[in-house]
Image 1 (cartoon, one colour):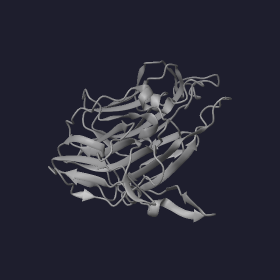
Image 2 (cartoon, one colour):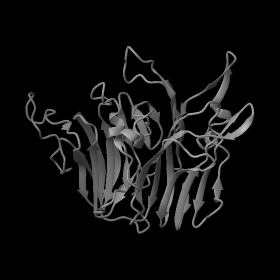
Image 3 (cartoon, rainbow, N blue to C red):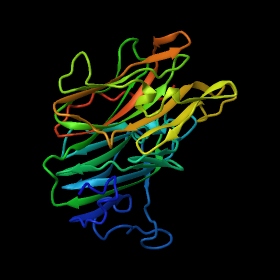
Image 4 (cartoon, rainbow, N blue to C red):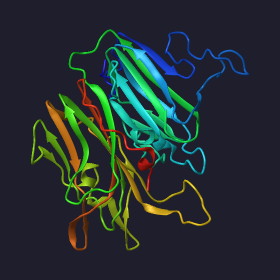
Length: 368
C-alpha cells in the first residue's frame, strides 16, 4: 500500500485500493460524480473549479472522508495578495488536518510555510515530497493515512475575503492499515528574536513512537556576518542534557557546506539549490510585495531551507525534541547571535498526540 509513494519499484504491484479525489467540483469525492457542475459552456464543462471566496474569519472544510484510506497528493493554488494592505495572504491562511475525529489538529501551519514557502512569498521548490511550481502551484506528496476519518480545513485570518481558492486532494480507500501505521503531523513555530545561548526549539512535546521526517526553516537574519554555525540536535527517548544526534552546522544539516559560498569578483556569494531531499530554494533582501513612493524595498535578509529525512528518518520510541543553535562566525571567530526563526516540523507518530501550543497571531506571523 505504501511501496509506490516515493519509489517506482512498487508500481507494477496491483493494489486492492479505490482511487478518489476531492475538489470544488466533487466536494465529497463520490464515485462517478466528478465535474458535474454546469457552466456557460454547458453541463460538466468546468462549472465549479474553485471555492469562489473565503470570507474574513471563515474556515472552509476542504476535504472530509471516511476511512480507512491514504491521502496521496494535495494540490492548492491561491492568490498571495488581496490588496496593498493585505499582501501576506500565504501566512494569513492557516492549514489544518485532523485524523479520526480528533479535536486538536495534527497539522497546523500557515499555508505557504507548509509547502516550504516562508515569508508569505511563493517561489519554486523542487523536492521529493513538496513541489511548488509556477505560479503558486503548491503540491505535497507526503502519504497521510487515516483509519476512521480525515478532515482538512483552511482558515482565512485576513481582514479581506480571499478569492478563488483552488484545490484537489487525491486519496485512495483501502481495506485496512498495517498495525504499525503512524499518522502524519506538521507544526509551525516562530521565535521573532531568539535568545542568546538558548537553542531554538523546532519540535517538542511529542510523546509516543514515531519518526521525524523533515524540517523547513524560514530564517530572517538580524545580525551581520555568517549566520549558520548552529548545530541541529535530536533529543531522543529521554535524552536530557545532551542529544543523541548533533550535527556540525546549519548549512551542513541542509546538505550544503562552507556557507553555500563561492568567491565572485572579490565578494562572497551564497548559492541557492533544490534537490529531492535537501534544499535552499530562496534568498532575498528585497520586499517586492508592494511599491511605495516613500520607502525603499530593502529588508532584512530572508532565507528558506528544507531537509526531508525520507531515506534517513529519525526514529523515536518514547519522545523527541529537536532544536537548533543560533551561532554565527566572522573574522573574529564564532559568536552567539539572535535572529528571527520560523520552522515547520514534519513527523509521523501514533495517535493520540499532545495538543500544539497556541498558534501565533496573524500579524505576529508576518515577515519583517
